[in-house]
Amino acid sequence: MTNIYVLKKFTSHSVASTKLAWNLEIKSSGNVFANSTFLSGTWGLNGLVKSQDIEVAKGHSQNFVYGIFAQDTLVADAIVMLIVSNTSKKVVKLIDCFIRPSIAEVAYLKDIEAIEKLSKIYMAAILGTIDIAERHEMRIVKVYGRSEPLLVVLNTIAEKIKAQSSTLFASIEGRWLVISDKT
Image (cartoon, rainbow, N blue to C red; front, top):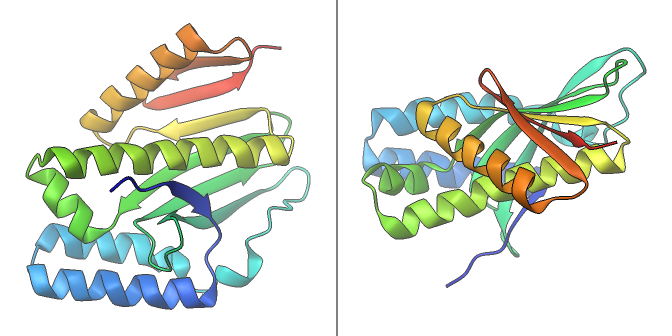
């Protein structure tokens, strides 16, 4: 089954559904790693549902939390943390992408299907972040490579953008994938 993933705002229903599902998955697995993923990923959901429209005052930055959802579902398969900086550089930073415990646990075991799902989730996060940047006239998207495996993925994405896009520029700057217009 092919899942089409999208980055979108949380609603009060999707927050409740995501917290419940992730918590049940943690309890059933007993995985300590899943517990830290859940705690880190869900702290940002509290209180952020009502202010997800990005209208950051000039000269300021603001944090936002979005979900990566498979088509027509209420439970997020990932929780994405963004920082929007409406400064002279106009940057959107994808700071972290917390993966649903049941997906992370299987992917950690190097299950090919789970790894494919994981790559689709990360692509949705990156493409969704680029879309947010374009809609709000931000000029730069930065994606943080928190782990070595993620840095490998980001390097691959940078190379693909360089080879395939006539309008976007991509580079790796330290642990960041930086994407901007060629203009």
